[in-house]
Amino acid sequence: MTSEPDFSHKATALRIDRLHLGLTQQNGITPVILAPAASVHTRVNSWPPRGVSLVENITKRGSAMLRQLAAATALAVGVTALTTLPAIAAPSSPSPASPAAATTEVLYGYAWADGRNALRITPAKATMVKEYGIRRYRLTPIPGAKERRVVYSGARFRRITAACDLKETEGVVRLDRKGLGTTRCDAADLAFVLKLGPAPVRISLGATTVVHEFLPTPRKPRAAYGTIKRVNDTTVIFTKGRTSTRLHYTLADFHRVTRKCGDRWLANHTDADRDGLGTRACDTASFTRALKRAEYPVLAKVAYDPVSRQLLEAWEIFGDA
Image (cartoon, rainbow, N blue to C red):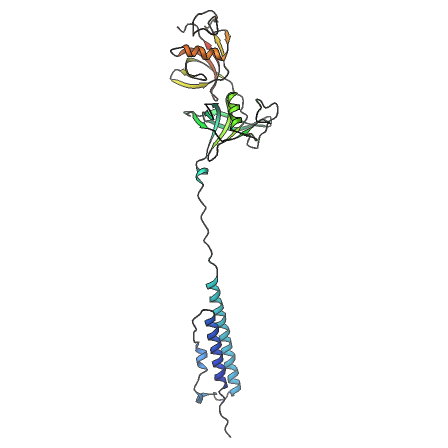
């Protein structure tokens, strides 16, 4: 009796195709009909091939389809993973410097009081040196440097003294590795220091003004002959030849040729040495008062610091009539 062909393999192929379709649709992928799956649906009259039993043929074809199904499933999972990966941001370029940092300016020099919460400073070149283990700064004039006015209201002030209200270091110095003061003070303390005379400072101009005290190296004063013209009660213009220098003073020794310290400039000639220089010792107030009464620039000898531009001494000269 001839047995009828078993078509259970077609049902198996149909279930596999449906499983493949369900997985691909679940992962958001358009189903693709693979060629091996279609080859299962062969005409009945060619099944099974000659020399191969029905069971063996179904087993081989089923194994091949399972391998294809596994490959398709792995592909679907991989594509789904790619579509769900978070976006990787491109490396951002360094942000440009902030406007405050870009406009920061540093000035070294001697600061002078110039009204309420303001100072004047002529920028100088600063070089840090070590003397006996202490960090100091050697200041040298910058040719053509112009005097600058700086408003320091709200500034941070760092002193070299142990306390903010000291006039001198009193043997105790507070410095960092850069040789700058570390004692935390404020703008009111800076005003106090400027009243004492010129202060060697480093000024950082930016979003916030920061002023540091430092220790300068000692220098020899410069002596010269020329003319003096009053600007105000603490400032004069000293001219020698074609060069004019603005000099400031708080305490200056004044040597007069007149009989009294309160006399007008060259009112009489009683106290002068062989070179015509005054020998009568007078104070700063006498110098200011004598200049106020002078209508024109007067001849004098001066001693001053070329870096701080501090007027240290002035001599009235006999013969300037």
